[in-house]
Length: 256
Image 1 (cartoon, rainbow, N blue to C red):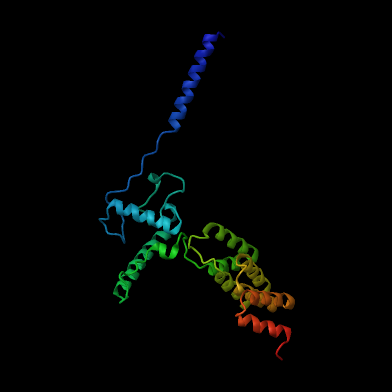
Image 2 (tube, helix red, strand yellow; image 1 turned 90 degrees about the vertical axis):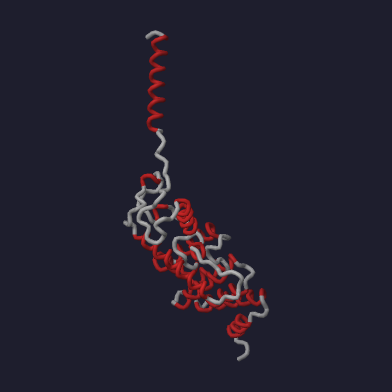
């Protein structure tokens, strides 16, 4: 095979490859917001497309979700492939119900004689703060604990803290872990409560409240020495912690 023939063959192959790549990389049709949306049940029928776009984007940001959460379509696929008119997904009906609830709540607030220059307006972000379900941290942990146990619960807390800390989505002060740990004590799970209260003092090492609760869990588990240490630490952090002081004296047998 001559050099010129090899060059022509190589050029033909290269041209074929370029055309093939160009054919597979055709731009998808661009999604356009409709001038008049179909199947609106809560929003006004004549809602401008700019308002519709802002409302839908607001939903996704407030709940931390994307279009497939409520609409028929596949994540990662162009919006032109979605069936936004369909009512097939149950979450779309839930969203409509929540929109009505928000409107009703704001209507009720406006009727109140609130001594402020401006009434507070409730929106999706007010409760959701980037989460699909606006649960408290204690409720979220209780849900995981009931289905997967203490190890998964601790892992979930760590994940939630890494993702949401500082975003206002959950209360990461000592109160949330204390609430959940106390519920475990009431259910008769002192060892699991100890895990939660230990986590609480790790995250809040200057909280007398957290150490006092850890002392309660140790006492319930029959670990007297560790309970005493925890109460002592609680009093060291806050000498006014009368609850910890009384429990410490009781464990030491003082005042009898």
